[in-house]
Length: 286
Image 1: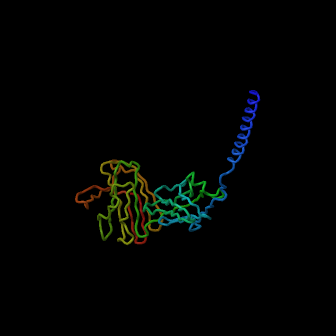
Image 2: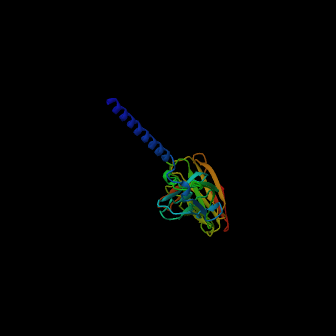
Image 3: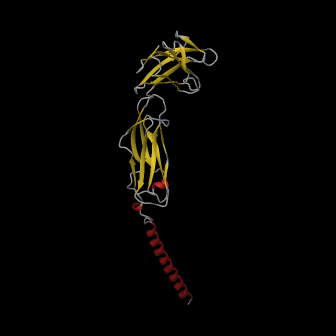
């Protein structure tokens, strides 16, 4: 009798194990099936405000970002620079959020007018959703991110000569001032916009409407020279001119003009000559 009961108990146990194994197998097969179909997620499109790829400083490019259906989650779109000769000071791009239950948002890319004369630059961007979790909320057929190749065109002041001076050692402070030596204003202190604590220093004190004749650009080294300098000169016509050199008053016989507009007398050394014809400028190195 005891053996019979043991056999029935053993058989019942084996039956329960078999049933549980089948349930586990069926559950496992169900678990590997996709929880949701990503093909049902919204697709996204990026439409630029213009088909052009060349933008002048001060202009904006606007992307209209649309999804074909609403979802109950927010999506964050960002523009990331991935190449080009431009830097973070040449453009700004707003990070925008497509709010839940919305289908459209606009992203602005602004090309900064910095008053710094420079050659045309290139800019490569990727625009899209980069968050790992958020990317899976989009339909995998969407092109995300998109890649954009742009050109940034320099813009000069149309009425003035834009002069920028820069140097390598940013711990040193150098300045420059401008002088008039025209018949109306012979050897007269003219502009000190290039005498701040910046690098580069930028001055726009010589205008086309100023008296025709000769002007000078003079360096103040504050006894900290010699140093290598680079002048970037933006002409009203839109052209950019570059003049480089080494300032070393111990080796070069500069003409010295004493600047007294600040209440004392400070030596300034002529390095550039500017001739204003009334319609254009000619700039030469002395």
